[in-house]
Length: 380
Image (cartoon, rainbow, N blue to C red; front, side, top):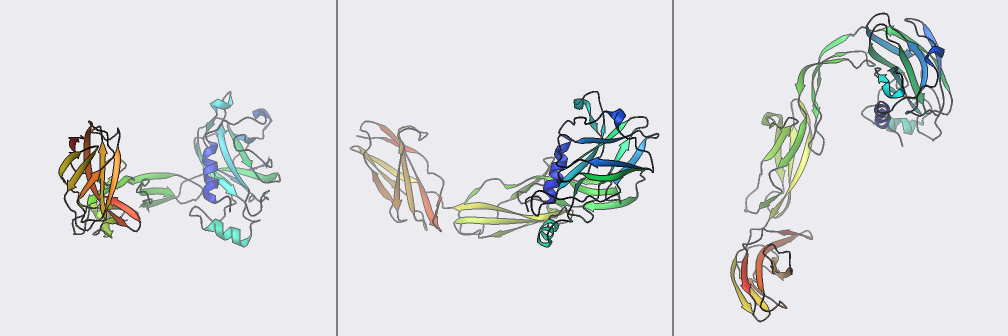
């Protein structure tokens, strides 16, 4: 499907970033009253950055109110197997659209009645899917004596007519509801915690009882480690969103392929108030070699270096600058036993800097050691 519910919710969240134009003067709009129904029509093919004014409401008392449509949203989309979507919002109108204040906790709604069974099954796989998806309702905390405007838009191909009601809302509190911190694959996570929440699903009231910090990073100190012949277990750094190290009681680390030269994996599994698994890789590279001698010749130099056991070969690099950014040249030597090589076609009378590193090829990929210390010689 082209539109899952997560996309629908994303569209809804974007609505608050736009200014809304007024399609009708406030004086021409019906005034909503507590307990009574107000008939409204949401035009077809609406645009969410230009929502339609539907009705006004001026509460006599400050408090929490619930707004809902008495008819489920039912429409058709211009696209096959894509549900039309819409949003409803409550706005405190200013003198200009730029001064509008959005006070309603608007809800994205979607008509699933026209979907095929296959498309509906795909939609239900989305973690944000819920039953009664086509309900239009939301709550808002309002101030007495202020005039609010109900606005909405929907992208179905037909106008949608319904009756809206507004009623006072009293929170039905469910205490100590735990929301674990879900760690993403990249090692980051949004915060969670214990909450006292309103049990009505259309009310977003929540009171934080205890916060569980999110995560900002799961990483190694470095990404390359030198082969030792033993299993390597580099320390994993896990930090929360405040830059503090996470207590190790909340995660365990296991390793795979962490002995031989190549790519190793660390699996970080979270538990307790955290949930999820993160995989991080690091490279195991050969031990580095050391240059024994550099001997100058005519337009060439000969490098002798120490053998490194178990490698595929060596790479020799020369340059006329110590940072190896001028006249740089690289020569590959195949075979671990070959420990001397002449580098030819150099410029006579020039001072050359030399360094060497070992490499091993694993599954077609070369893993290089660190460079040796740099030595220099003047070519004859």
